Length: 290
Picture (cartoon, rainbow, N blue to C red):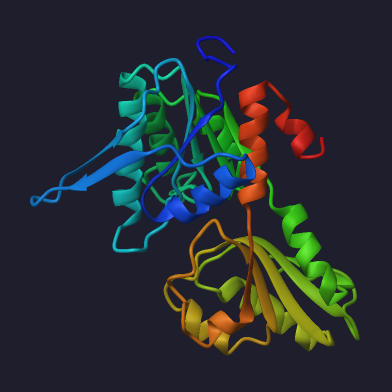
């Protein structure tokens, strides 16, 4: 691990609204979060800096890039980029960004003339501030994600977490997106996707299952975005329950009728294991069962 004092434990930071998730990750490693300062200025500018010496250390910064908690996606992205740059300027041995939910990952190709390819631009931002590696979970298009970055990347998977939770519903049918293949009549169907945004895709899929005779319908998705009309769409949906991870906090639906139908499982153990393996030179492929 060139340039990194491997004998020292990793330093784990978590910014803003990702602090609770970061504390859970650090806890699984037997660590406390490294101390840092975040300041807001009257003109809307901000800064974040480490309050501990990072020189030569293996450093991990956690921030999930979704809109919420009074900050836009862009607010959170810029804060993380500036913090990553400050860690490099402070002579950290290696800096790794852990981004449970990666913003702009769905804009990975041109769908109209002169469209931006935002995934590639975001990749260049992380590279420009000296990020050594970026780790995310169930990115929307894995090939596009891997091709966009020129630094090492890791895409963790929530399949095991979701499968263990969904298993209790005794599923007999499996559906991805809104393509229905096979017989679900008289069976329990589980719809699997990488994220739930406005909810229309899984609602259509659930309705299709019901029309084909499914007795019960559940959904499992890594990222619970729940944007736009998701609350009204999903409250009227035949879905009995939606299982998501905690890569995105539940602030958007907290206290709503939909919240009572959403079950969250923690992705923190997977990210903690990824840090352990990256720090110790272990295999992420083995973590993913490959």
